[in-house]
Image 1: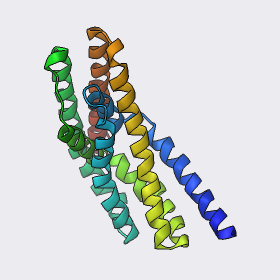
Image 2: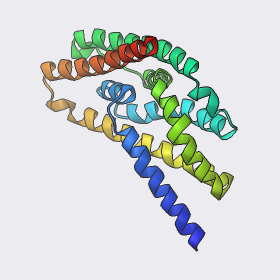
Image 3: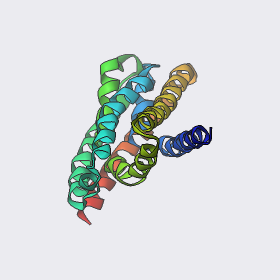
Length: 206
């Protein structure tokens, strides 16, 4: 009974820690807003793209590759490459923002790829898993491999729930948006992506 309570307390801590990271504005949040404007399930698709990177990463850390992602050289390379990807994605959204509403279309595939790219492009995502995430995995392993699997599923479920909530909210509320509001929101997404992109590149060179 005590073991079960300890495990439930651990999963609760995973949910709180995960949500504290997921709900912070960042590249994934920005693309979720941008894609959610035309596709209410964009958040779920972005979470799938995010998970396509995150699940293999969790297994790599489980098998002892934490040192690789914590490496200063690897972090610098990821910062430069990731920064370029984010700036490119930001420019794409800026081009979209200049178009009329009826010309702006998005596909489920676009949201899936956006989630994958926004995740890969964020070096701090990998650093989070090499530090906070690796500690969570070590704790989960005290409950065995099942504990690790439930950690992975619980953490990703937080991503899925939050991103879905954001995209559905954006999609449902867009009927109240004027063309000016739409451009402001997409402009905000452009600024977030490009600002993070530039910051990642500059931090790698300092």
